[in-house]
Image (cartoon, rainbow, N blue to C red; front, side, top):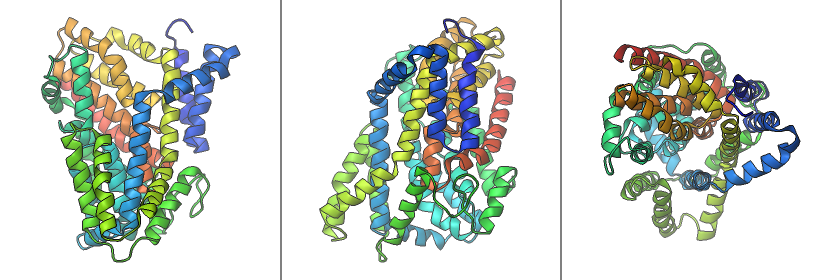
Length: 460
């Protein structure tokens, strides 16, 4: 394919359809990538796939993601095994009196842990799922609340990994002067309509002002009968790697120390947040520093030997392999979509509507479609900002509003895409089947996206 074409839409459509019917996101992504490569050159599918796979695995972002996700899995395993997570759950149960208060507590915890969406998704889900299980709240509902307070909250807070990343991109693309990236980012926060509406919608759902409907209503009914969705619409059975990870996490709780202390949960979490801030919002360095303090802290209490601590950390790292595999497959698929010129096709198709009045709404729509199709929220922003921002300046559009539209689309894609990293980790942390989580939360994300699109039309 030499020119952008509507045919570039076929691989994303195929992936979404396969993910829904096969309920195997990694397999669906790989089939979609191979299909896209067949469109590019049928005689060199395997060679091109090998090249792309090596390119992705050598990418600094992927290496960072593997280490961070695995590190979170290791830390969570320690929190569970030492009994700290159980102690926190017991404390939370004193305040949780029913479904509404449990969901509100989940929402509040998600807002508090605003530093990073990975930290948010994994910590909040793992912490709250035993509480929400007690009150017969579906894992799908828990995962939705967790996911809605991950990227949407992080994007609204200028002290987060999102702000640091996007602020840097604004400087790199001459949208902001050197050292002014975060200041320009802050100007766009009021216009990040999707994130605002996503937080409002999930709060209303938690308060039961917006009742469960569609697939979520069915999930809630199943939860009332103590049924947890796994794969292929079966219950209380284990079939895929994701479910094996969930089962391993449950076994960690079963073998956890019965006399766990609350400080064994709070100290690592507080340290992680503090170190992350100290290292200029670098979550990986924050994790390393946390482990450097927490391991001796646990050993001094004689909770476990160093060998046992390392063994538990490795178990926790392994529990994240399904999530890591899904994200790696998504990056491979994104690379194929880039070669098929999917971003250029979408932008070219919508460019006739890019006037100063309609630009923010069109940018949000186009980038939301791309982020949903490719599962790459940060990557799409990096690719399209050099295209969109010069156009915005040329037609004298509202710059903070356009930046808000771009970031709204990124947060929508992060939450709504079936195989984005945030969706995968929210499902992983909540112990929920990935496709069940994606399908049940999609109607709510579309409500927020529709409201955001209308908002951009009205404000512009």
